[in-house]
Image 1: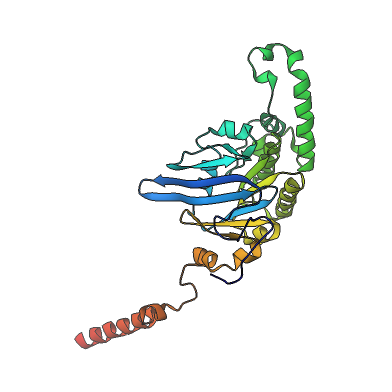
Image 2 (image 1 turned 60 degrees about the horizontal axis):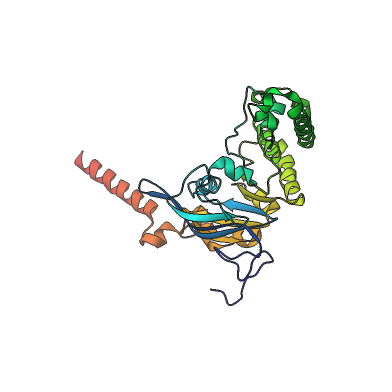
Length: 305
């Protein structure tokens, strides 16, 4: 351990895996999820800071999306507890999690292709009296609310530059536009924490800067953001805090520049011996040895002829 104690304004104490935050919005303890004999998630303790953009990174198979699914009620853990704004959400179903203000998007977008873009947006709004079978029969009981959420939806679509597509089928949008639609729809429920699962995956580079700007805007509007991403340039560019998972565990966390240079992070992505010659590990260079064996085999074959 370094003699110098690493600190950060978001952290109460020393920076490190599982460190205590000054004002956490999510706190998770001993969360595990296994599939047969495979442990996909094994998080001893982690806290997500409030009013910050937090990146959750790690190699493929690290357990990031599974951890997302557990926190948001789309999967059930084997063990563990977690809280959101001080209220336990362990084993709370996904729709109730969303109502409490923890809203997520998906790596593979979940837009309803046969509905219009505007209709997709309206589905994301809460407190709609027209969804009740009895009040739906009496238009004056729900018409004002529908006008209000329609106006809100059009305002958000304009911000995401999708307003001109509002009457188009969602299926007609490009992959990047669907990512924008899913993020815009999430805002219809006025989330406190928005969780984005690989928002840049499959997005045309022309839309990348737009998505980055929208994510930054979420923070400026008072929301907390937690996102999974493989694009390290994006992570370094917009994140306030980075949490690294590998083999289901949190192996490092801290500000972006510190994490990018952490040996545990480099090992997680590139392997523990990424900077060591294979010959130094085994006492012999396998390429040279293979050539020698091939030469010996050829010589024996020629001698037998």
